[in-house]
Length: 564
Image (cartoon, rainbow, N blue to C red; front, side):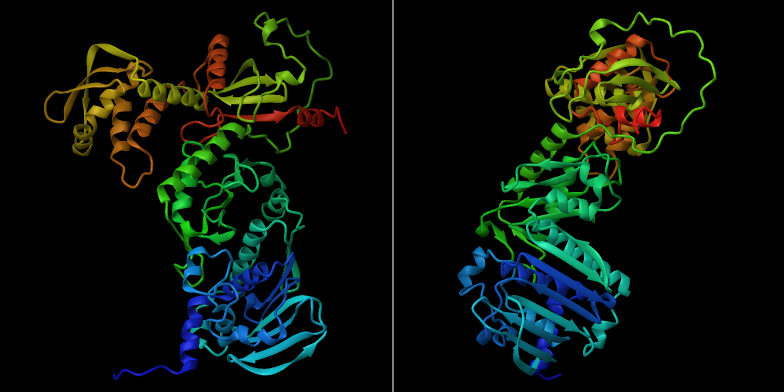
């Protein structure tokens, strides 16, 4: 086939495919134009999944009459002047391809007016060509209406999903920008129904309520301070999702997808969330414009960072610190079932001598924790089903999972001891013979020194057989062989994001902790609760399961009819 220059119409449609992937792409480009025009109110309407109609109305600066038609020419933009400007782009859009690309694959109407103009300018385009132009009355701002998307490009049209799916993508776009710009009032109509409306009062938490609901918004933990280099909200571990679709990152207020930022965020939750669960996050990151490359992809959704390692470390540390400082105890919100009481009371409850004076609660403000992560003073009442410790706090009733709580205590103790090279080791009176599988033996040979640093003394004793002479002091002798087997299996897992040392510490803690069904004395329960209060992350075990739940005092009062 001979080389030839493509017709302009073909070129425009090919180029449109880079920008307009689906209806949501159109909405995104138009919203970004509205935001760049300093709009404080943006209304989005979509019908038929956006294929039949999309309309974006804003109260921004508008386009001067003599520039309206020019806005639909390829590579026409008001946002950069020269190539050097690309290295410091401060606007959301700058390529000058959105409007002509949209017009190439749909019927487009624009009505716009600036503050200085008496009447607005109306433009109607079909197949990228102006078919009607005139003056019409309208308020300041811009309205862009897009109809019959991909009607002239059937090949693109057949790859679209159902109207419901395409509408959900549009809703996601509006949601993301409402989170990025809480000072802008967003309204979204899907097939005539209002799907979202934000207040535009600048409070991100109010937007979180609209997007994720009141319960989730209340459980969100603030990261940094508004306007700082890194700030936003992340969910406490009690609120988790089964996919990463709830991670929102905004770099210099631009909505981006970034595997780097996703990894950094989830690394901050390590040990706080169960496997397969993911957090909700809305994070704003401010960087010098020259440190961010936004010219990676025509849709401007992907970016590159100049200092990736530094950014990764900053996000991980700041989010982790916020979680540790502010993470609340999960509150049980389900209605309790009332229990039928006997008609007559039995003997009065006997005095409990173990209820010492120092354990009674002080009713002043001073008795409350200084942060959400710090546990209040808890008074142990007893044990339920040999599994849960029942404790009273100044703000309600606590149920503590004794195994999960002990796991957290031992996990942090083992890590601290190893970091300080002060591992407590106990020698076994009789060496324990352990047999390993070939795969486990390879791991043992490769990581033997790491195991030794935790207190394991292991010697070869024939083919696939070893002698265990010493173990960490926290490990029970009867579980030592099982612990070694699990550790070797864990170290041999592929694709895990967990480090070797953490895998070992978790396995040691898991096999050494008290189990569900173990009957504990009152003093043992008190000791465990006190140890848990001193940990860095008392609310979850190393696997991410909650260590406790709380029934609030007000909830108990309502259930017993003490308040209306």
